[in-house]
Length: 321
Image 1 (cartoon, rainbow, N blue to C red):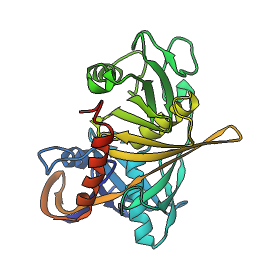
Image 2 (image 1 turned 90 degrees about the horizontal axis):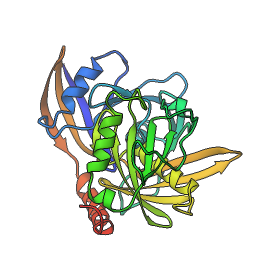
Image 3 (image 1 turned 120 degrees about the horizontal axis):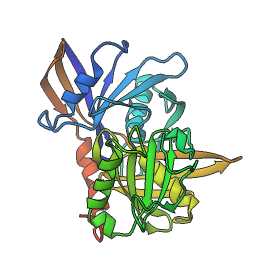
Image 4 (image 1 turned 180 degrees about the vertical axis):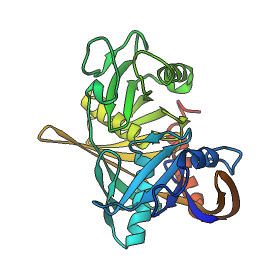
């Protein structure tokens, strides 16, 4: 049978997006692993499923490149937000995710005329059991040195709800990825700290309202961007005085976003604002667990986004290759 998929990205975090009324229509892990192979037209970081919801405008599921399932994806949610809002003819919607129903809305463009959406990132927890993560007898890790990881980098652990380990680093750790790669691969293999793995981000402070984030994503590896990681990094940076603004610009290898960090009655209110780009429409033949790309129709949107990438390269040229 022939099915239509969109290839989309938020901040260069690339996915296939598929709309279905049947949550068990296909073998999603098998299909996703195939879609994400680089030899299949460049691959992707995962598959976004848009499904019916009984308590929201739509439901989103996120299947990682390795076939595992993520509880949330901020970059992916922006593209789902655009798809659902355009389908329903609305500027705002509520999307059901694994851990929460999240508010999304269309926003003014953050760069030229790039389609831009804001999405709620929730829930937030610093309790190590929520990641889950174990370190000695601690219940939290907040901006502290963990000798087993590094004698100089201060780390924070937070679930939003995906598990994140955030390190505030000097430029040398951005210029050379080896330390981050070694630690990330260790924490996402069999280890005594993170039994289910963890997303590892290194954050370099640029200005009082700007940071750069590079993320090794659980189930994927290094990505152009990870939405929940960028939001978690903005939160950690604000709480520890790395930045002093509620609206934080976050550069990453795939572009940039803005993250709003607020507190209300002790609760964190996090919003991720960035592009929701559709690069192509694919016709894919699916027969049991056999797949074939039949056709690809490109949009003009990526050409516009390339101008955004040039801006990022200019702003980060002093420390990022």
